[in-house]
Length: 357
Picture 1 (cartoon, helix red, strand yellow):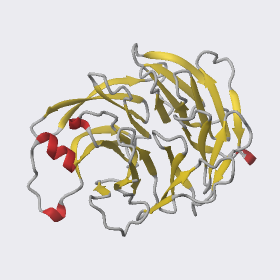
Picture 2: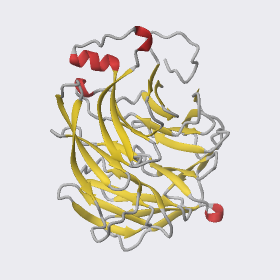
Picture 3: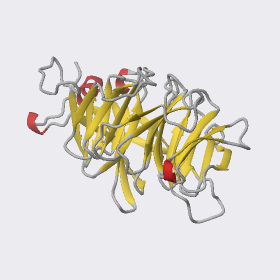
Picture 4: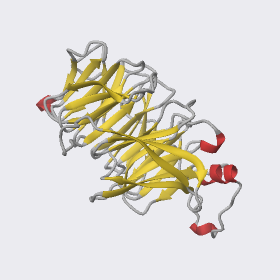
């Protein structure tokens, strides 16, 4: 049963889990680990316009209580759906959070972007407050010669080769890091203006970036001396977000700044979108492909909606989403869980909701 079809329908189990944080939320990422003690964990970053921000790791209460065999003595009505299992301070708001795609690694790693790329290690041992300890494993700075840094807008962690992380920056560059060293594997001027997002294709060599110059560019780590512009917006409007379909790597979804549509690109047919998704009534803020389906995409926006689309009819026009959920405010962030593909998380204001789809 999906909460996004008919929220009024009775269900056998809870279809929405809600977590209310102290601060406004933006960055959010699902843990990919499959061990029972690490299921249903998310990391969420505060968005406060000052230096000191926070990242919290929360776990769905039922999973937490099953693991730690403890029940917190709270009255039922004040009980949140999530337990905060760790928290750490972070300089500036986090622009993106990803957990390591290497689910077999002994180390439980998390990465954040902001002023720099940081890698964090989560310790299973609990401190006296019952929280897990977080250690800073690495701070990756691509400009050692300056006291100033160009903020990172986003990054992506390669799923085929988890030693590779690519970052995008307002200084027009993309940097690919080799975490095994750690050292820069490649650094290039990717766009004519700020780079707003980066995404790896399936495999370890090809990635795409988007930015303020209105272009979608494809790169190959084996031949970085040239790139391919696969799309440019009319009027060169900035492109904010990009998501690469991991099940069918011919397709890329992208979001144009302040526009209510999502464009779908076929890299075999550059320059024209293969589809445009137009059901939102205000600007789209976030997009995510289904982790295991090549034809399902979720979009969310300032109209407080999260919509799921079935793109299997392409190249015929896609008129309407198949599922819709309306939140209580503008939806700034959206993530589709790879470990639990029937769950999507959204963030609006200081609230995170996890929805069963």
